[in-house]
Image (cartoon, rainbow, N blue to C red; front, side):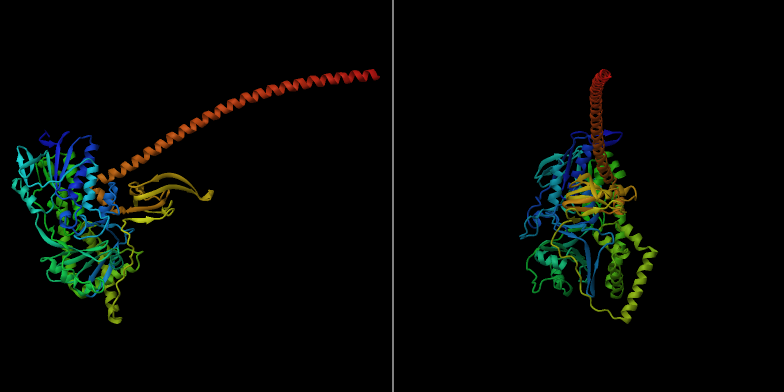
Length: 637
């Protein structure tokens, strides 16, 4: 550890302890180790986590609804972290909203694929018989290990200041003194209180309890009845704000939020007529099922940093009701950049880490307003019916824009910041659009009474992949087409080719890309037509990265652009290498041609000499014959 001009910086050999091996801890370890290598620094990173993330039930789980947002799936793909099918329990492509008066399905007009992942945070529910279940948290922790981070399974039960450095203890024994201590312990009162007792000004964020329950229904039933959709229920059950049902293979996860969550509330929900229609005939509520009561942030922590201390994830700042894993990603990255680029003192964290936390906190203000407005709409049947009519009208013709549907999609998926959604919700054009459809719906309801509509579910596939699957030879991008979408290869291979129509569609191979490679990145910089065609080689799974959302994420996290530029740089290097190789080949061919020409010239000269000699000899013979003939004629005379 060194102090330069009042700043504390990490020097080679510095020890960084990360308390907590959930997403925020793993993200910090992954990105810090990568950036340290890029900067040429040698640092020691150790994650302390008591759980193994392989056991069933609470002992192996971090107690979460387990939804990885569309934006985070794409950000991780750009970082080279592709979620495998063993981690993704279900790929989500739509949302259903259910009320006592009917249901409506929402897709975004931006949707090109299954872009949201549902996961188990541990080894699966208690009593689970599912095979090949891989924990999301365990997957990230393994990624951290692959990047050189050490993992120690230990319980940290005390934190002390040892001189100028914090030290962590377990059962009275020091585990490590830290040049930097990273708190990634989530909303855990015990560990949070330890940091509070350090006297640096940190205060645990306010929170409420939620209820997460896992109910086994069987993969076939989940696929046919719930499809690739998350289901939101607005049923006005006492003590519950709303309930979401999340499909995960053989199971559904029921996530209830409200003032009085509990197992009895879950049983009341399962017994509600609207939910009963979603369950198998004769379904009986189990007496015992896997459940937990995680805490959810409703505010922000006070001063989540000090000299040699930074707190990330839920223990610092998180998005209201949504995308806690995405918030862990954002705060961890901000802490990494501050730590390695600016220092690990309080001033550095205040100047470079705190602004990111404040951005999340301010955004939650807009989220409170949006969810309050949604609550009002959900309790007023007449307004709710009109809003559902707007959604149904937008969803009928998916080729056109769906502004109101997109607002609800982004609210509940966490794909956009609440401030952005709020500004769009106040758009005069949207207001006119919504009022127009509502009036038309009212008139239709008066003159043509509504009939009960059957719920529709267009997705019954049991496959749990993210992105889109392409078969062998199927075109992903066509030369000349207009598009602002970028792509990441999730699995399999794709080929980049130029097609010569004049030569009967002959293909010239430009590149062969595999898992983690990107293509179509030039669309970020210009709107020119595609310069080549991309096709699948065998079966390939490809994730589309939406242009507008990516630019906003790059604005907040410029390192995403660095990865794209790094890939482009590698591609340019490969092209340069091919050009050099081609030039060598051309020079070699030219040399051989010159050599052959010279040899041909020598051969030609030799042949000319032989021909000339033969001609002279023939001329001489002819002269002799002519002389003899003349002499013979003279004798006749």
